[in-house]
Amino acid sequence: MNAIETLPLNGLKVIDAATVIAGPTLAMHLADFGAEVLKIEHPRGDVLRETGYQKKGVGLWFKMANRNKRCITLNFSKSRGQELFKKLIADADVLVENFRTGTMEKWGLGYEDLSRINPKLVMVRLTGFGQTGPYRKRPGFGTIAEVFSGFANITGEPSGPPTLPNFGLADGIAASYGASAVMYALYHRDVHKGEGQFIDLSIYEPMFQVLGPQPLQYDQLGIVQQRMGNRSKNNAPRNTYRTKDGHWVAISTNSPAIVTRVLTLCGGEKAADDPRFATPQGRVENIDEVDEIVASWIRERDLDEVLEKFEKAEAAIGPAYNIAQIFEDPQYKARNDIVTVPDDELGPIRMANAFPFLSKTPAKIRHSGPPLGQHNQEVFCNELGLDEAEIRELKENEVI
Image (cartoon, rainbow, N blue to C red):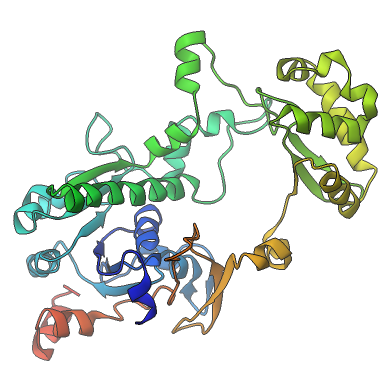
């Protein structure tokens, strides 16, 4: 039995017709756990190939987001491209696409069209604002979702502007939600003997949901959450603190026992027994004083001593790592969180592993994102039965 036959999604056929981050990352999750994912790009290539850092002209982000996939090119705006796409759809289980609302319908490739060809198809329709509502045709990306969802407005210092992450946070969250939704739809289809269906996945709604009970707090108490920097309205101490040797650490005190340990360690029994600090509300009301107790203790000590004494006190703390430190950390090494992956263009490369870890059928990264159109011959000739003359014609007509 080969490696892929032991994976939980072995035999699942997925077509990834999406671009950039959220859609391809959703399909990446499925591929990591064994799905046979065919990525379809426009002949000019996914823009993610040219996004971010490159080596030898090869986009590194693309290498991760499209690992474990086969790659072909196909132009959906050409009638011949639409015909070939419909042939590929005939035996697919899942389609992931992120064209602007109405675009697939314009090409005769909407859900109604494709479900007539394959009633078992699960189609993920990923857009900035979803398939309905007054904003459905607006272009939308992760950055827009991060502001529209309310995330940016509660992130940053109180006196500063709303703050955006400098990575694809909303895209990554949408991808995880989408992969879960695919599993729900497949369970319905295969276990309950149902039909296929389409999944209306916006980028902003998963982001909105992970922000917690803000709608409930506003509805019941009229509270509009404000920016608080690294502090929390729910508890204290909770912040980042600088050590004597210039490193940063973060602490969290989400249980009364940990609060007592942190205050005893940093301020002695007097601080731990102070009645003003006995409740989360009391500590938040006196947050400047609580923060100073912890900050003054930490800034008098080097990072190693701070971490050692917090660990001995069984108090939660974490160093604010950069990626170089992550590569050297023994926890990351012990869990095999960074793996070496073969790549046809760059040789062995290292990237984040596939998570979470399953005890019986863990994911496996078999290769990184392939070069543009690497599997055109294999798919169009070996699987769809086209000959060399037809392949040349498709290239000449800019179909592939």
